[in-house]
Length: 331
Image 1: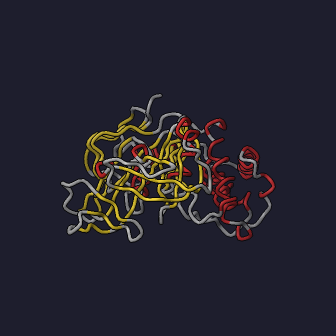
Image 2 (image 1 turned 90 degrees about the vertical axis):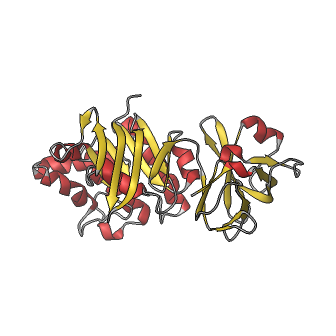
Image 3 (image 1 turned 90 degrees about the horizontal axis):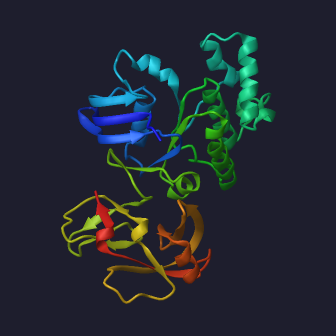
């Protein structure tokens, strides 16, 4: 699939500090892409750049083979729509909120109302049209914000942490809605999240973002904490993790779930990180299974279906967790 966005040696600075450093990155092929990373990784900043709201300070950025420049940015901004983490709805009905941007684009009141109703219907939320914005739940407000943006017919929909502050039922509904968007005519959807389980439910196209650097790869486990030089471990406060011998410091770690081994009995091996936990959930991801385990914090392992069966992994079951120190990256 052809990527919509191409970055080459792109840097974004704030107050003289590099907050995004993208030597080479392609984003926005057809379908859904998850931008996964911890708080402060640069996810919101990247989305602002993708929405053409924030200029890059160095390097080359292209959108659909068009160079992104001071001259082209205003026109390109109409081709991308960003929904903020806490979208603001105006003091009017849902239909009125969705119509607002259309009026600013020059549509007549009748044409704006017709497109608003069509968009709400396509998203399956037509019954909300006459509701006042103040009466909506968090999940309903998020859907209306998406509808308001989609009514402007962007090629790319960008969602900043859309699942934050939602209960489990609202998350399930929003996952289903986002999964349906490519079939409804949106060429590409990119959303940011720190929840790797939700990302796995929606897509196998994952971009990891840590400290402003991005790259395609597997879903990581991110934890904050402190480095203990006396014992050469990283202490999250709930789990002490042995790290590679060359590490001298850092405040954040990432553990590759593909390198986390699950077993019914404690393994006799050279793996230095071993603990026992309880399986919380199983999620399909790219032909394998993402297993979430409670080990004092939520740790995820990516296993094959054969391993799932042979180890009799099931929600609520006890399991041993093992991984090598070199499966841990320290930042």
